[in-house]
Amino acid sequence: MRRILAGLGVVVAAATVLPPLASLGHELFAFHMTQHLLLVSVAAPLLAAAARIDVKPVAGWCAFVGVFLFWHWPAAFKWAMTHPPAELLELLSILATAFLFWSAAFSRRFIGHGGGALLVMTGAVATDIPGVVMVFARTPFCALPAENAAHFGLTPLEDQQLSGLLMWVPANLIFFAIATFLFARWIASHEELVTS
Image 1 (cartoon, rainbow, N blue to C red):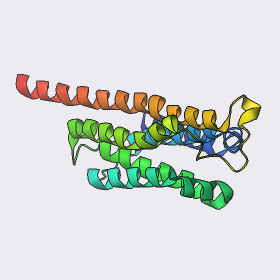
Image 2: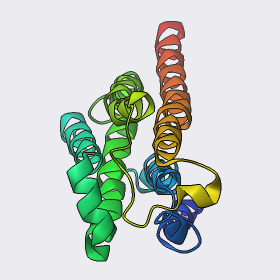
Image 3: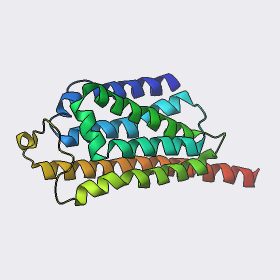
């Protein structure tokens, strides 16, 4: 099972940095945010579930949230999108720190399932901030250097708002689903202790 999870994680991660998604990510901001969404919410949890390493929760949470918020700061984002090595650094650092975050959430050594659920929920709230700002901003501040939103029938502002919604809604659904699973495991383990 661990090999299957690892294989799926690698496939999803590779799909984010290869065409067609990588190419589309230079034309439409929403596609670039889809890359982030796939790395953070799909590839990283699959890889962490397969690896099963223990990461201290505070370290994993701070590394992930800090890196995630940094790359969604407009100046850092624009720098990454105008320098191909920096863009690769952006994507790899997001994946690496998301892997640490999910490893901490899945660790039974440090926090168990209940603590993991809480870690995931607080991580979801912290990483919602850029998405919320993008949705409610009145002007586009994260336009791509080779922005081609018009080709997709969108304005740059609509592209940014769509990107914010992608970060906010689908990502939260995945985070909350995993948190609910961990919470259910925590409840089940406590019920087993009571009945034994």
